[in-house]
Structure formats: C-alpha cells, structure tokens
Length: 109
Image 1 (cartoon, rainbow, N blue to C red):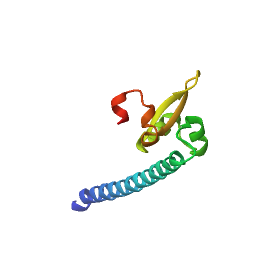
Image 2 (tube, helix red, strand yellow):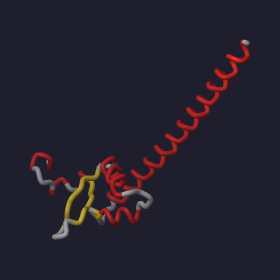
Image 3 (cartoon, rainbow, N blue to C red):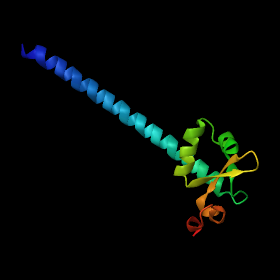
Image 4 (cartoon, rainbow, N blue to C red):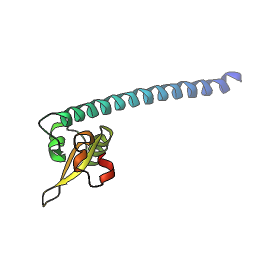
C-alpha cells in the first residue's frame, strides 16, 4: 500500500522539477534576448551622427518587437520620446544627449 501512495508523489515531484527547470531556462533566454536588444538600442542611440532616431528607423534596425515592447526597451536603455514635425513623428533619443530639448526646465539640469 505504501508504494501506491508514494508513486504519485514521486511522479508529481519529478514533473514539478522538470517544469521549474524549463521555466528557469526560458526566463534566462528571455532575459538574454532583452539585454542584447537593449545593448543594440543603446549603440544606435549613442552614435555620434544622431541625437534622435524615429521609432520606424529603430524598428527597422531592431526587428522582432511590437511597438509597445520596443518602447519599453527604449526606456530601459535610457531613451526618452520626442515628437517632430507637423505629423508628430515619434522620435527617441538618449536623455544624456537631449537634455537641452526637454519641455520642463528642471529636468534639463
């Protein structure tokens, strides 16, 4: 009788361990992918020729992300959003390179 009670518990423990391992591996893969994307965004935005880049341009260079996910990556990389022109094109640049163009005077210092 002890075997019939222990077997399901052992199987449940093994399944839980497998699921936890797969979950940990998946989280590590997601973290690495996100970190590489943030590093690539940072490289794009630190280029000397550009203070700002359009969301479309960044998306062309950093593919595979929906707009909102890309915006979150941009913020994590230290970027802030601006709007340009009469059509309010969405532009992104590093705070460190665009302090002089902020709307609020207290933020520029």
